[in-house]
Image 1 (cartoon, helix red, strand yellow):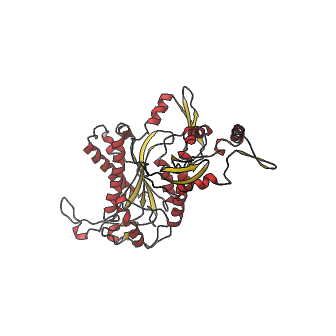
Image 2 (tube, helix red, strand yellow):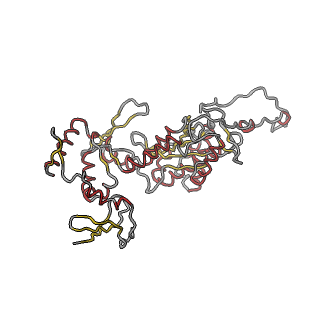
Image 3 (spheres, helix red, strand yellow):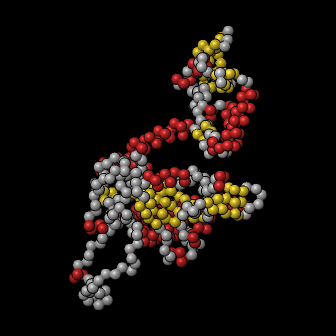
Length: 436
């Protein structure tokens, strides 16, 4: 007797409706279910091949155990006991990370996996977790990166610029987290772009990718933004690329720090939050830092975990019982692990202050690398006469009048009080030039 069973194909997340026509134990046909409200009769070749999978002579229908004479069939209870004993032995001998967990198509859409899979994965306590993304999508992206380069990298030396928030302003950042985080992004980008447009610097347009990092290694509050900036600027007319003075110099850091401080002060005044900030903050030096980043690949790799990582993972917790909490962290110098013990309330305060607002983007780009202008990156790479790789390229140097101010003619060097002619005997800078 022929019958038609209406089922759902669980091979992928589309979950298309299928109509399976059977006669006894034999499948006659598999077609799309036209009454399904989602797929409406449309299916892919994978759903049609379910019959071949079901009738495959090599399909395992019972558990098998390897013996000296080959494989022998065993019962399900015996197979589960052998699997549990073997997993426990491997974890005992080689640690929790000796096991791996895969959760993806088609396992993610299986009833048994949905009910018991997550519990089993957490019970194994392994870091090796794989999915359809890590097995299929990410390898393709990695191959594209190795063959064609990163879409946000230009064939010029890159620089890492860090904009930290002064300690006196960190309580304000905790009480107005979303506003202050957005302000930190906008003011740091505005300082870089304003200084780049200055004719005394490069006189062109820059691009940058910024990442917000609000904590230190020991969970202290330290909001700061890391910006990856290409070394150079595009002329306003877009026909020439200006390179910095040298590969180790991007911008004058003191001028950038003062510009960042002034931009933050103006933004806080506009937002009506300038009063809670002590006045001495606007007179102290801010610790803006700039350093060469090579091709930028390593910096982008370090940015990646900050997109999804939380301030502390369970693997760094030593004690989680009632009372004080001890966790491990590393110093910047890399001198091994350190341990810090704090009362439970203090630990929770340290951890929860780094929970960002919902749907807050911790990675942003601006300038030449902003999403609205990325369509022009191929033309920019053509202008640099190179593909998006790390090969050195020939770049235009900015005109001399863009590198330093034009000297005032001697006849115009007069005293502002008496109007008398001034004679320059020498030049002396108030501060020595600091390294980039």
